[in-house]
Image (cartoon, rainbow, N blue to C red):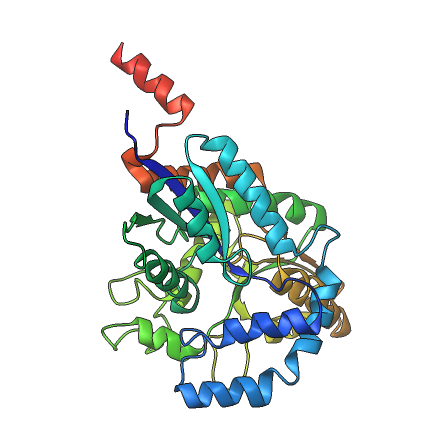
Length: 360
């Protein structure tokens, strides 16, 4: 019997401690001061943050957070804890902790808790299906930085991007099918979180593919294997296939842009206005970049986008819930972790029984 224990660190992006200007300001300061998020020179980032964003944005953002805040707290945090509880039931032989890249519970706290529980082998599970330097990259940089400070450094492995994983796709299809059936949607939007175009170009180490031609995201190649936009397009194609949507029955778009620099297109808010103007009456919106509902899904799409669509002549726009604590997703997440951990984690009961039967 091995004396080494395996710990799992489940990481999402983060949330303020409360829907109030003070906590939101602290959260935004930590988030937007990350050079992987606002990737400009430090002096420019300081000026942008302290002169243009922090003096004004916290109050407005706090008002938005207040509209989605639950009695038991931030939706992102609540669903994070529910996912961890589900994973503990599915992987009982491991210690599992939840962490946030920004805010609490912090990555440092999660790693220290696993250390105190005797975990020498760690599986990091980022709750971002698609790779981006500003999310997955930043999270792993922080994990590596903190882990490297220990005298006994842990052995680390990471669940890689799962944007095309069948279980992930099936989970969103399971959540979305009832919504599409009940709504009778005329059109479906696959709305992903946006990023500056320069992030796509920086992810292309060849410098010759990403955003260099209209079909650069038509398939995953060596050049765009780390491109967030290309991975989003791959997810959308697979989800559309799972839902049996026609090619003209859905549109891929990107939300949450910030500032004046070009972000990846098409923009969700503009697509919504265009659909309403064209006479589309009922629209369902998936947000497959998010595994848990949060401000960007519940307020930006579930409230503001609904108002925009109806104001421009549409009849009904409905947000498809995120994966949250859906059992199909928790099963898929547990499988992703087990596949990544390999022999570090004992097989699931059903797998073990199958193996024993085969051996017999």
